[in-house]
Image (cartoon, rainbow, N blue to C red):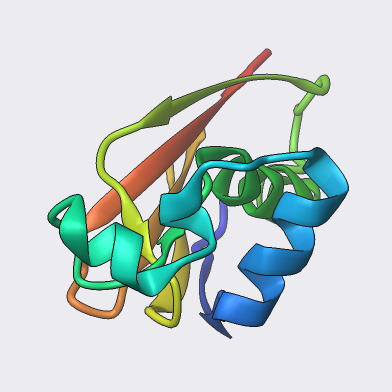
Length: 111
């Protein structure tokens, strides 16, 4: 497999809010920075489902070789809205990292 690493910018508060509206997600840590801070986060938290969607879309390009469409996503850590996101392929896995290289989610393709 060829190397794949791409910076995709940030998942903004606005993108998180719109995603939550579409999905019916009413969890306040995904919408309200004050509530997120009271819960111990530095600001709005990206829903895991949104991180998973980013990985799924990116996997079409990054894991196309032998990829059958069956995947497993494992969430490692919460992602703060506004953080820069980097996608990186490692073997049959696609990693969602922040700009500090912390892994937040891993998509593994099943062949």
